Length: 67
Image 1 (tube, one colour):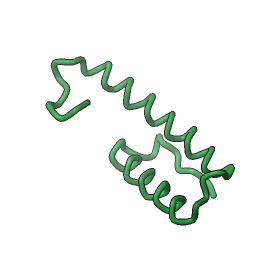
Image 2: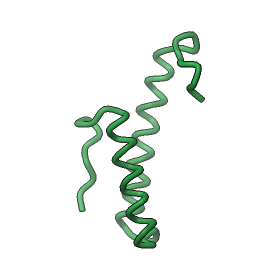
Image 3: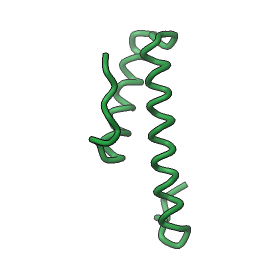
Image 4: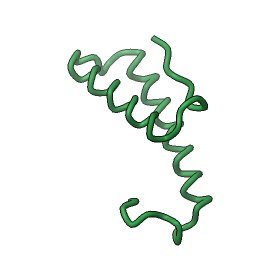
């Protein structure tokens, strides 16, 4: 199975897709697979992208609900 390209998704779409995939893997108990490891790398790329966006915004522009 191919992972989607992050360039084609906004952050909220990517997060929703990732949550769905993790839930599917959990139901199948498929955490020790090449697909799961690839999914973790994909999630790390998403995290880096979101962190760089937060740094560009600066602390005064972050939402009250951001952590």
